[in-house]
Length: 576
Image (cartoon, rainbow, N blue to C red; front, side, top):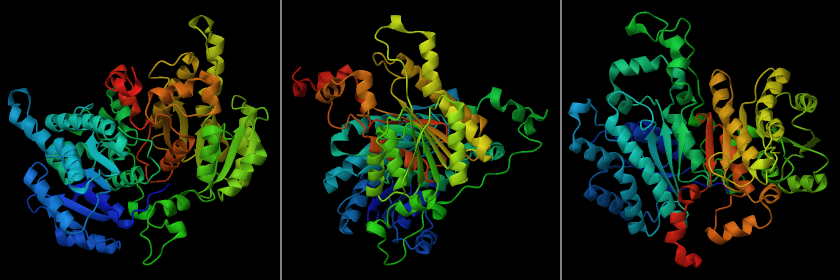
């Protein structure tokens, strides 16, 4: 279900500039009421109000509040209550106090504490204060982070430490607040040209970064992704840190970037490129999300959601889903079909109940699907499939590879290379092969390619050796293909879901597996096919185009608490 943002309350710390401002405007376009904090009178309130008026949004409430001061937080919430606010629906923690690191000898405990006080602790404190004052937590809590904990940047020591703590709190708060149905996540960015960015890195470093403009993410892209994460499409994604970098971090190394770094013998001009790539042009939030017309309620009351955006993006576009007649594949077909997409669903060996599938599409108000028998391991089947799409529509917008066929081993003794090869032919190679065939036949790649993976590569599942290996191949190619195709108009990602109750799950683990899991886990451990489908639609909505080369885990945060310690702490509940 898509969220209607009309009159929803969005609280954004550090909301008057840069990323915070962009987020506020994105939500305001859809009718949200934004409360924005700032420090020391730094906001140009007149200009900010004019920007909101220009898009037809509610006038923002702009409050001077130091995120590190309890009195300011208390006064902010009192002001909200006095204004009639009954609930905070979305909380975005964007404040980051900049303390420059100046090397080993200059480090001091006070600088560390100050950084945590401003850039990490407010995320927890605000959530607790909101609940104490309004009697409920926000439906969504989003922390703005960066890749500083994993990537060295000059003078970034304290910010990086604070972001590492912030991301840790995201995982823990997601677990603590799961019973309150709060979706808690962090959005991790790289280069975002803002005043704060220039302040921490200085003119020389930012000048170098400008020569790699294709890796920079705009505040508007961050805002669009934040909107998608709170849209209702991404609700199975919680307790996670989502990387928003267009795939740049994977290629940011000497071996890959060496030719550009060594283009000049002069160290001061070492990043000069003879023919630098053009600065990329990206759609703004305004291009993607149009403010509803005054007095317009829209279809099914959804004009203040992202529904019009999805329809504009996908209506009439071709979406190919392998293994599309059951489970996750069928759910994806219906999800795209509801947005007017023309769906092509493949299956093998006459396994599809075509009558029931067509009836479900008709009931959903979706265009009739094209159901085709096509073996993903056979090139001739793939070529015929692509040619059919070209004849019908002319181009392929979205490719979803969902087929997974692999040998399930009883013991490690029955593993064979022949079995591995067969598994790769069905469960890995089509991810690459379908893109190659698409480019050959259409003359271009699909705009979006999404692979369906599982938890197998990261933790042990009995008999799952070859399935896990196949998924690992797909996930690795997701990253490498993103790097190889950085200049192409394609966004490649993988969705890795917690167990999904499907026929495939039962065939792999047997009929007793799902009941056993439900006995030892709280409700929500299993992800529904429709939730995976919604996440796929979000990734191809245009709102999340900065997310590339990522493996996104859909598990509602359960993976973080999936351990024997959790069973011990809940032993009374389970009678252990």
